[in-house]
Image 1 (tube, rainbow, N blue to C red):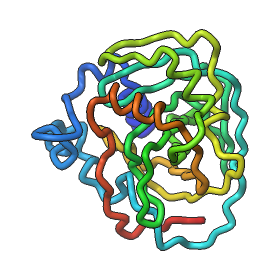
Image 2: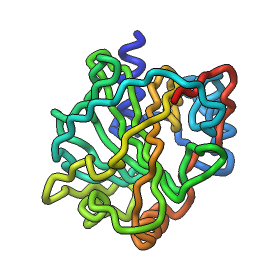
Image 3: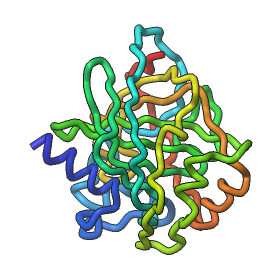
Image 4: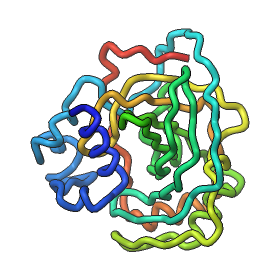
Length: 243
């Protein structure tokens, strides 16, 4: 049951056909974040105790092993699902964390950032969503600041779909490596999906160092979304944020 729940959650996060049959939600108004848990029994986890995003602070020193990234150029198409712009990824790109292997499924963006680091918000945040063979999820989060253009965004957003439901093929497969900082130290905490159904038990791996994108790239994303697509910060409660 847990495996199927998490796999269904991943499909929701990916804006799949499964998501089309789920209760509608939004980032404001009567279907906004404060109401998500009441929109459907499937979204009851949105009022849970281990929700994301959070303000990462109060760190606990830990022996965090380096994440082993094995990414190929696998970004194949780009989708606007009305909540985010997402690049779907071909099989074969993986990370290994503490001997646990997750495969990259997709990456998408939020503006402004959902997570904060030491109270600081960022113009954008990338979420690289991974799943293991049992359907468990791990998200690598990368903060994005305004600066030089980003190679991955330039390639992926060459045909950014501007209408909800639009999907465009990416001519030359995009590599998610360009979304990663050169120095890959990270924070780790247990959290959830940041969109309904807000499934908990997600491994969050937040890069300490940001990457940059140009002002034009950030503004283009904002214009396509037409609204901020960040969930408000959630209580940390008794969770440990490791570094």
